[in-house]
Image (cartoon, rainbow, N blue to C red; front, side, top):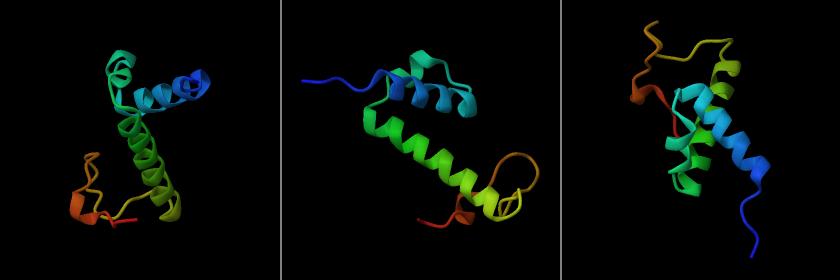
Length: 73
């Protein structure tokens, strides 16, 4: 049985820690699927930002965007 690739685990932890400011210990307690989902959601946010020229619809300038402004993938 092979374990999860260590390089990929470090990449996921660093990615989530950078954006959410969570300590690695917290991220490592997440289930594998949950961790991958956070990575996917952060990446999707970046894609939306890039598509709209750096802004997200509904952005009020306080760093929070109401959930109803997000479209389902």
